[in-house]
Amino acid sequence: MHRFFLPPVAIQTDSVLFPLETAHQILRVLRLRVGDTVIVLDNLGGQYRVELTLVSSEQVRGRVIDKTLAEGEPPVHLSMYLCLTQREKFEWMLQKCTEVGAAEFTPVLSGRSLVQDKHAYENKHSRWERIIQEAAEQSGRGKIPRLNLPLDYAAAVETARTKNDICLVAWEQENTLRLPDSLQGAPSGANLALLIGPEGGLTAEEVNQAVQMGWQAVSLGPRILRMETAAVVSAALMIDWFETRAG
Amino acid sequence: MHRFFLPPVAIQTDSVLFPLETAHQILRVLRLRVGDTVIVLDNLGGQYRVELTLVSSEQVRGRVIDKTLAEGEPPVHLSMYLCLTQREKFEWMLQKCTEVGAAEFTPVLSGRSLVQDKHAYENKHSRWERIIQEAAEQSGRGKIPRLNLPLDYAAAVETARTKNDICLVAWEQENTLRLPDSLQGAPSGANLALLIGPEGGLTAEEVNQAVQMGWQAVSLGPRILRMETAAVVSAALMIDWFETRAG
Image (cartoon, rainbow over all chains, first blue to last red; front, side):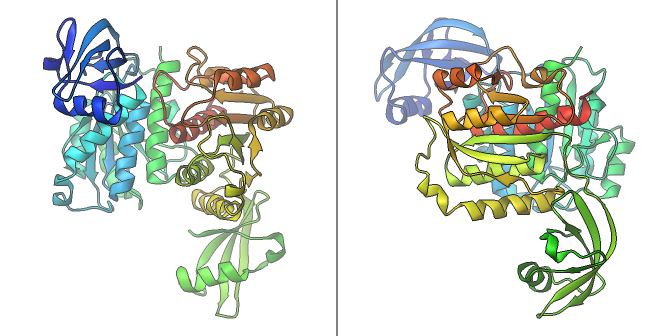
């Protein structure tokens, strides 16, 4: 069933007035009709089954059948710090990590990041927000993950540390502590940060800098994963841990 | 360090004669020189540190420094049955699942597979083998995952069942049994099969057909993952389970 995040103002107690862009999509792209049912999400964790009552080029309206809690939100808040890289790969990480349950993204400029220019990023913010929203709708999330402005490495590790209970950095030179083992005893509902280095890896200095602020370096196993694989796999492992093993 | 899988004939006790294609890559692409060290893999689980002793357009030779066991092989044999889909996405799954540790791939034609023509596949076999080998070299695997010929759905679920101890099919309509929970008690060294349906999903009949042969339907959590995300995430979860939790 089609799912749409709508602004709060569009959702009344028992009726929905779809914003123009969504109305256009319903009418022209999806070609839905009066009587069809869609899912509307309020981005606060609520989801509404809505039956379309009016579908025209002027407006699209619907009637709320029922409201329930969206089921797609994981029991933890996972904030991903992703070093900037080529556009296609970065967008791919945003999409996949949204699917597996990440709650927040911060692009990071590390020493070896392939992209070093913050300006190159500016015109991408709204494009990336759209990618995240579409992935959230398709995968059945109850909230749209937040996209923050890019940070330099030092600012990123410091900011993350102040906002999260557990901060993990995936590092190919960490050989002993596997990611799931680093979560032992972590409470459900924790705030987690996960940092993924660029293709060339984080430098030992960068990892030390994070560790001295209380980050923990973790291993994703004995194989070397590409950056984008490391991102989606580590996010999935963390969220799976909290959904199947936490207290 | 650069890693190359070489045929057994290329590796003598204490010296290596690189095949033409690899020699070309070493000389022209990577521009390595006499004295540089590379890793040579025999695809049987052994890895050799090799110092280059001759680099010319006629031939490239090296001296074996030492031989050890390759560390990138997981403790289980994971055989992935991937429904055929558009080329780019399929190749992406081969690459990513090789990185996370899959040992074998079988393309499957299910009822809703986007690709239904086995002939369209024929000229891709060697291309796909190359993608797998490159991913195996880059990620530090000790063996190159095997690529089987495509099978129809019924043949795939039957073949897999005869060859594996545990057969799991990721299904978005399975709501209770999470993938890691289905592995409780599984012995290290097990042979595992994992089936990933196409974009449109497997039909209930197809899943029943597998279940009646002893497959188990498992959930990847409350979010709907795209096919390619489901493939890499479920492979990673299975291998992580055996590397960190198996008895």
